[in-house]
Image 1: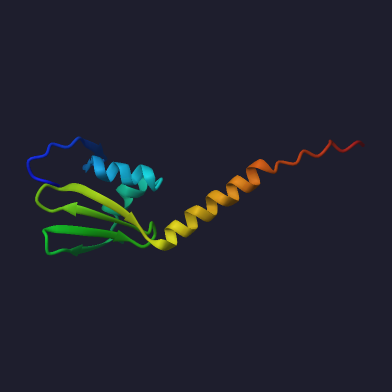
Image 2: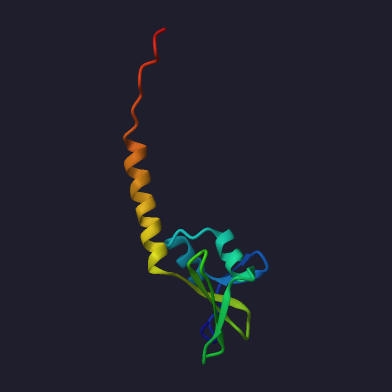
Length: 109
């Protein structure tokens, strides 16, 4: 977070999320429960960076969350290429199947 600039923070569970991270969450259509799960899960791995931030990654959600260690605010959210492929394929399949609706006539007995 840039010093001297006030940002709007959003409360997400026990965490505060900056507006940049909220835009990334909405743009990438990541569910908020996936964010909370990634931050709270014992399966998540944490990596410290040189600029006093922590990267929290969870393999089951394929999401990385960067948290500022000084303020505890979620700075940004990224997703892996596997997740991008999975979600785009799911969207294409849904679009293809939802528009091709076939209604069969009832069976006459």
